[in-house]
Length: 393
Ligand code: GLA
Image (tube, rainbow, N blue to C red; front, side, top):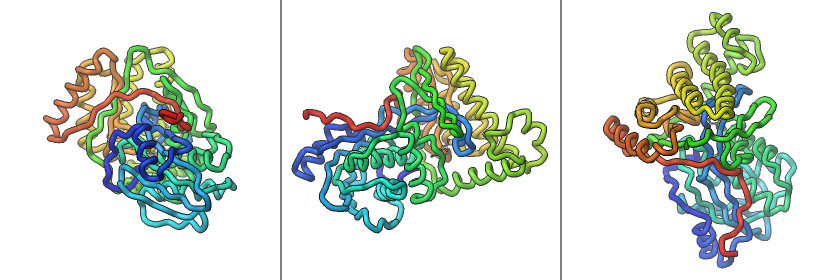
């Protein structure tokens, strides 16, 4: 989920982060970690229901320039928050909800799994907008995991690390989120989204349909009470699964839900209907991508948004306004809110050639309708968390 705090990500790049390291620590960093944000094309709130998701890692990232440090301390400066934090790896303690907790939580999860940890010092920065539903926090956790693995010389297994990052988020940060975010951040592949079966963790990369691009349309509204609303949806899904006598909603088909719908209260029936239909849409979306069928993919994205708005009730008037502006704009195949909900971004698919006119039209119509200034940008599918080569070294 989102890193708590008000700072908005600036567009830092690798060179600037390395330069900030030199000015703070007086030498070159030994490593530069890049850990991308992600956008989910379709499959929302399905991951913790052991269902399907179709996200991609993007060309916006969290960076850490770092070197090993004698002893057991981690000393890190965030350029986005203009703040330095230091903590010892011995006797890790929770302190509030700032960005440092994501480093600590990751250290805690790695230590719990038996990994050997060593101290480091580093500079952190990123251009994943914070709290926008593009997974700035999982990007930070996976960046921290990569940094700890680099310093201790341990192996890098992105799937194992994604599970540990999820544990950090669930047990240290306290949000019951699923595996999607750290997993796609770990395994992302350039040019591709990845269909993930969140039960078996089977993954299939699927290319974007030729001639299409993905846009992220940031409403400039941020979610509030995220954790509690998210955890409440999760609890409702679990309650619906129990009432239907299944391990998780993954095990319910649309026709089974139709037949047994009256076993559930109206709210639980609608929550379950979103998950059950979203799983079916997500699998179909991957097939549409494989067939290069952008229209079909876009239609499924539109249906997904309606389901999140009406059945799962995680959209907001601003997200709905942005979706409607996008769906009405030239060249748009489809659009939906993306991420946990209650604010943040819409994802849209469109013809590459129409992208400039699309962004222009959506920017104007959204501002006229809401009085807000959105941030709109295209994003490319990129590779997952890595140790990037140092510029100029
Ligand atoms: C957040 C969580 C994910 C997932 C999405 C909704 O991003 O971190 O695990 O549940 O919300 O699809």
